[in-house]
Length: 216
Image 1 (cartoon, rainbow, N blue to C red):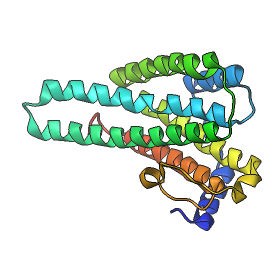
Image 2: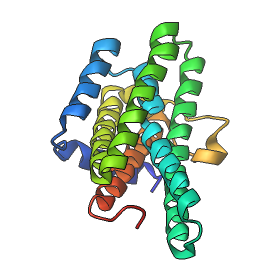
Image 3: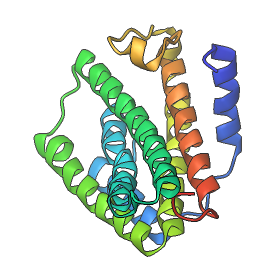
Image 4: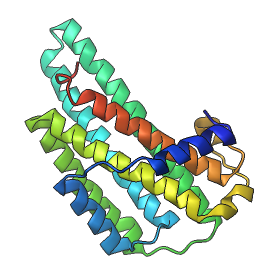
């Protein structure tokens, strides 16, 4: 689903869909992001968002590997855990491509960034979010999946609005050393529409897991 027409339709669908009712942890994270980086949607702010976006999948993957260590003597269950790890890794890698592409664009545009706000602080936020996701998963996986769904829903809507606010991107070609890895798009607007759609797919996968047993 990479044609301009298809991606525009998906963007319009996102804009027409109400946001989820976010929980306290998600709201605290979003308010903190606005406090540290401003309410304006900027590429640098979205880059920080992508630094944070990877960590729930890392947390789930680590819990799963620990479970494999304990349960490798039960091949059927261990295989289900391994499939879960593979799925988490795929989503984590997808978020990683988003981050690398954003960094590439920020560098090309010569955007100046604060060392503290864009190197140190994102690591602190990601560290905190990682442990929150890990702890929630250990206590009750549903809570961790719900938090991630809220985060991804927020990201989906924010990307749709980012594209809407930057109509000039329709005429800026997307050229990247990462095209072979992430995909080819007609312009920069389509790139960010696709990233927003990725976030929706991550959200839907988390929502689908809320009612499932751990590692099912």
